[in-house]
Length: 210
Length: 210
DNA sequence: TCTTATATAGCTGTTTACAGCTATATTTCA
DNA sequence: TGAAATATAGCTGTAAACAGCTATATAAGA
Image (tube, rainbow over all chains, first blue to last red):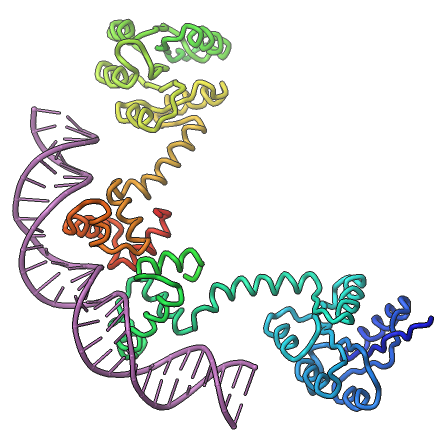
C-alpha cells in the first residue's frame, strides 16, 4: 500500500474491548494500530514521543478520566483526533468530551461499520456520532430549547405561579423578599415572551414546562 | 315452554323494520310478539287494553314522536319497559328518551345479539345501550364535564384571557362594558375553582378547554 | 308558563401584577 | 482568573385583578 495508514491508539480500561477492537481493526487493515492502553497515565508519555493520528478513548478510566484526558491530548497534540468510545449515554459526558475537543462519540455497542464510518468522518475533520448518540443529542437539544430557558429558581417559581400562588405568598414560602420573587417573575415573563401570567401559563403549558 | 314468554310490541314507522324484527324475534322464540304499530296513536289504545311487557320504540314517528310517546307509555303502564330502537345518534334524543323513562337505547344497525342482550338487561331492570350509543354517551359526558361548565361567552372570554388579553381590552374587542367582562371573569374563576388567572389557565389546560 | 341560567351593566375597595429602574453577592464557566 | 449568568434585594408608579355586592333584560329549559 502506497499511502501510509493512519496511526491509531486505543485507551480503554477493559482489556476485552482492546482485544476485540484490535482484531476488528486488523481485519480492516485501514489503520496502523500503534498502541493500546488501559489508562491515561500510560498513554500521555507515549503520545509525547509518538505521532498518533487518532485515538479511540473511553470515558471511564482508572485515574484521570476520559474527559480530562481528552483535553490533555488536545493540548499535547492538537492534530490528534480523539473519538470517544464508551457505553455512557449521558448528555453531560458527551458534551464534556466535545467541549474538550473530541471529534465524535461512538457507543461501544454500535455496529463495526458505524464505528469505521465515524472514524473516517473524524479523520476528515467532521464531528460524528453513532446513531444512538445522535438521537440523545437531538432530544437533549429539544429539551434545552424548552427547559434550559429557565433557571431552577425560575422553574420553581413558575410552578408555584401556575398553582395560583401569589407573589407575596411565594416570597413567604421560599423565604425570599417579595422584590426578589417579583424580579424572577419579570424574568420569566420576558424569557417566555408573555404579556402577563395568563399568557405565561398558556405558553408554559404549550412548551411542557409544567 | 312452561314460562310465559314476555309480551313484546314494536312501534316503528318503517314496515320493513317491523317485518325484519318480527322474523328475527320469531326465530329466537323468546318473546310473544303481540303487536306492531307504525305510529303512537294506534299503539296507545292497544296498550290500554293489552298488557305489554316490553316495547321497541322508534324515535321518529308520524304524529306523536317516540320521546313523547315513551312518556305517555310510562304514564299509562309504568311496568311496561320501553327500549328505544332508532338510528338517531344525537345525545339530545337519547337523553330525552331516558328522561322519559326508557330503559335503554339500541341502534337499528346493532347486531341482533346486541339487541337481544339489551332486551334481556332491560327486562332485568337495568338500563342498557348498544355499544355505539355507549360510546356517544361517554364522550358526551366527558365533554359535559369539561366544556359545558362554561357558557359560549365564558369560553370566548377564557380563550382571550389565555392569550394574555386584559379585561379592558377584551371589553373593547367584544364591545362590552369592562364590568361585564369582569363579571364573566369572576364566574369563570368560580366555575373552575381557580384562585386567580394563573391557576385558571392551568386548570383550563388540564381540562382541555383551550 | 314560569323558573332558571345567561348576558349584560354598575359601584367600591383592596390586593396583586407589571414596567422601569438600580444594585450586589454568589455561581458558573470559558 | 475574569466575564457572564444567576439569585438576591430594593424603590416607584400605574394598571389590572379580584372580592363583594346589586340589578335587569333576555334566553332557555322544565
